[in-house]
Length: 483
Image (cartoon, rainbow, N blue to C red; front, side, top):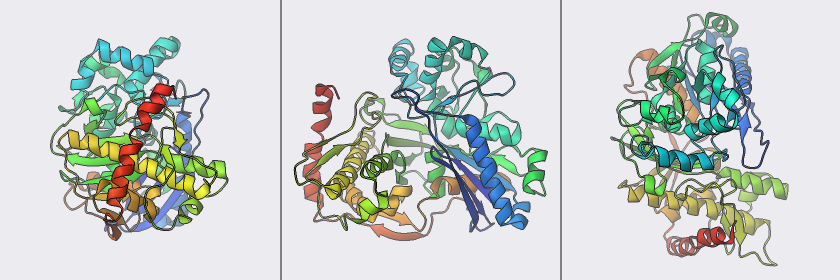
């Protein structure tokens, strides 16, 4: 038996798999995000652990005999979160999350002071990453920075609570901007740029390797007969790739979660900093990946649904099937954007609203806008020399076939839809836990059973290509207008 724990932004999910990766049980616990100032986004690290306790308690209650046989646990989590601990392992402040934009000034300063962030780190210095967050703390909360003994990512704080070990995996740690990504090791130079050393960083392991074992008191609580090993795990997107079998070079997926991701696996470190492509280590050894990332995918639909006081599924169901681009345009930049703009200040907006515009037209515009932003990501990956021939769909938004039809027709690639597209990261985490327990990745990362394949609709391709060209004019217009 193997457990996958996914520490998401909005919830913690746990799944229990048998030896054949069949789903035995699952549980979810909700989380909340605090926004104390405009552009800020924080969470209490203890809330992750409390949620993990809740879901693991639930698994034990559901299937106590199966829990007794657990051999491995894998972790995945939202990336880049700055979790600052004191010498006693206690959080010093709320975690600054991936979608927090407060450190824009520090980003420019760090890029100027240490150009190796772009070469060794392989990525633009963006407010979402961990390094500029620590520089912000260093400049604005010096008393907190002075007490900071260890910096962990969200899932690695959960690992610490599970095992008592400070460890991180390659894929998640690459998103801190403190790693020499090609060498898969911390960079002393990049750490020094933010006043830190290796002593402030966790030990690095591959995602499929053992990082520690579950503490004895927790084994007793959850009924584990023998202490399960805890795998290195992965950042949420690398773990999702493991969950859908995208571990071979050239394989990839599109994720419609809170954020949107276009992910492709590579056999080497392949940065493209000019177009704000993310180039990170994968969660499996000797493998890397590229990502185009947009900050508000289902977040955009959820925002609209909350304003219209309807459920997101109700809005998308009203559209029926894709019939061509909306007459209304939407920029999905609710909290700024990453690929390709690296612009924390830009904001979202509609264009083309008329007296006739209603809920359906606004919903259609949001789905189109997210799809157009993913097309921007595809262009950035293509500019880096990456070919995308086929994608798997994961995340909650993949339940909307009309959305996938729009994306497939715009990207002009078929999109495979797994039977269950909402367990990508937790499934990948469980698979990494299985690999660690077995001591091998052989046969662990197969592709999931498919529910359907969404092919590009040839009647929609020309219209969406034209609409995309028009949509691209909106970003510079909004930027010039100061939005």
